Length: 130
Image 1 (cartoon, one colour):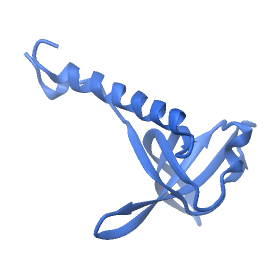
Image 2 (cartoon, rainbow, N blue to C red):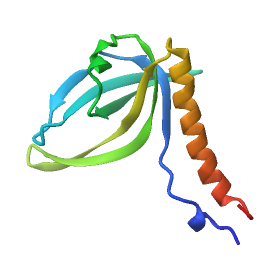
Image 3 (tube, rainbow, N blue to C red):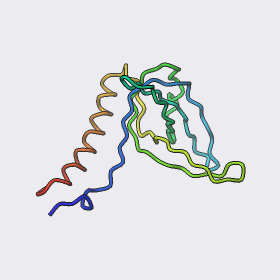
Image 4 (cartoon, rainbow, N blue to C red):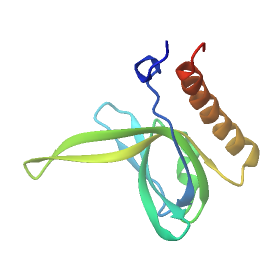
């Protein structure tokens, strides 16, 4: 018997777009560093969408990518809640596991393949007899 409840939880996001601005680094109270990006994704026949991306404990090369660099991002979606001006606010963002310049074709393909495998495992678990 197969049902959606037997499918393992899967949260995979793949973005292919251009950096809307250079990365900004932020130091957390824990001492960890977070790189923050905005990736603009073109949509055929529609307005482009800009997606906030964070990369926890990024490599030092994370800030080497300039505005307009085409990137492949593989990660997960997260909604984060915080206090701002005395009110609770939220932000939905992509938490990057990998952010690779598209010009690095082998690394970009490897990142996409890893996402495909992860999705394939979830889909395979949803099939009867899987």
